[in-house]
Length: 538
Image (cartoon, rainbow, N blue to C red; front, side):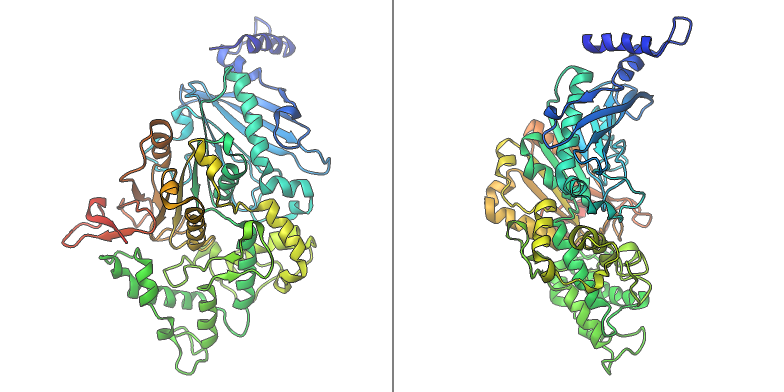
């Protein structure tokens, strides 16, 4: 249905564009969309400081990407208070057949790339419709800076850009979207969701912690949170990793992972390349069994004492020497002895020598990830060598950055009391963000809010063999339908299934087991590809 105020605007647009009757006239749907061009959103409608929002373009995109056979693609920017700060660029997708719901997409890494929000939710199965195809208004931003690399932290030198990245862009983008939605459809959404993976998972936690009244539900995957503690931990481990011959070559990584798999794969009832019973693995695998006889490096068939020592350090929680937001005192251990995904960007790297700054793929992935925050947000010196970083010398600044960026609050009562629901998921072998860190956050929520109350609005799942979008099991599931049913119909998630979308997975499936349970293969079962042959055990 076209609205009277936009119908008038449509006519004005056509006249200003000089379109005559002799020319091809846009369809009513096209004109209705194009009328959004130049729309201004005043700062009074934006819940955090901004000069204004501006719609740069609005064009109808036809096809099956959206419900109703098309959507109005809106591009715009939110102008900063500081003229030296970058805009927050956004994209809003308005389906022709709207279901009266909106969903906000988070970003990744240090952001900087415009989130187009036309694809599925993070790790959503290809077998289910995307939010846009379901009729959702979908939207995202670049978080308030522009860069071709999600590891570029130069923008953090600007205070407003740092604050936007730290969370303010989430609220600003949400509020501008609300104004555009109401202007286009003439009504407000009935339900509002947020979702994301990695930094997007972190941003989803920020959203429901800081602005709980804005969201009815959240899908949080691999949250990079607390972001400051993650980077302090990564920097600490990197410095240990490049000392005294502790570096592990790719061949030694293979040696370690092969030994872990041999010791632990069978502990969940089936040898399928996945370590599901990680607690039993902790008690079973002994890294000392790989020790070189002399304790020195004797080649790729064993580990030296220095290498064993650094692996144990990685398997130990990091204690921060400086104060972080909400009383967080460090970061969890990493799944190094549970089959951690140490290949690709997040692995130990191909070179024993660290560069300044650390180089992706060649150097330890956690050093690469930590460098931008420390260099640009904390020390604020583009030439600083982060391998010399001592957090105690920057304690006040670390605390300031933590306050800006982290989403540490375990008190989700405001979100829970408004009926909010959350699905939280993490892969067990993630080496970009430790799954044990998400476990620690979940347990803090339970301690703060009580187990029964937490279970009334939050479900937490660990997926065995899943890394940070990689690994031996590439998760694909349908969290949005589960969340919709919970929020809108009061039907709590039960018997959810996750499929392996990896090339080697051949479509195998597993039950989604609520933490602390894991999928255990049933005695006497004969087909490990089917979920009914597993039970969730503790």
